[in-house]
Image (cartoon, rainbow, N blue to C red; front, side, top):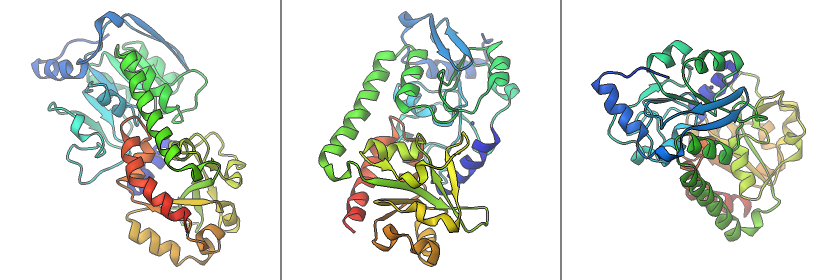
Length: 343
């Protein structure tokens, strides 16, 4: 899980990276909140996953989330977990570790947060006495799955999927089924699909344009990082009608979700639209790259077809790219994209 932790930590500064006993009265109160909205008639339910299958006998009441973006679909369904994994650090968040698109759905009960750079151990998860562990967008592997699932149902990524690259619709529907709200989850999926369709209809010139989503490398190499096909950030733009530029699509990500582009390879970043996920601030990242003659040699950059994305708003939203963050991201970024393509 270290590779995800590395990029998750990077995402924190770029915002653009894995059957239980009852508790005390406080635990019970949190559990009741966590299980609200599930349909008892939907259980028991069995959901296949990459490591076996998950059987959930009754509506879960104490959900622990270790998938990086899985908290959002739960909140969208009116289900509050007792703990969740932080993905992007929002220093000014009204609710710790939640993006601005999710804060209003957090409810009153306090949720424990697993910090972005510290994926929880099996012991830490079990100490919270969960009756369901949600790990769809985590880097969980067979050994950890086996240890957890021996004691509690674990909703892991779907069979055939890659760690951290589970499709937004698949993740939402699996989570909805696990909490007895499959129909409601489908409505969320349909709503996001319609939002993208509306954006494409309003911007037909997006169709077929190439895009690269990149950021300055943070390893001191002077190069750049670019996200690959299937990553949440590139998926956002392909859902708008864009295509990943062939120069990046042809690079081998070795099972990961980004590739490193050296200064000598910088022309691979050329595309109809260059999207830069800012580091600590848009202003600082823009100043750094505008002073970089190598980056400035890219034709798209010279033509002004570039969007610098704020790390804690639009950057965070496309990093999550889920049923809650997508409408927020569309409002934030579509006007900027239009302006950039106009040169």
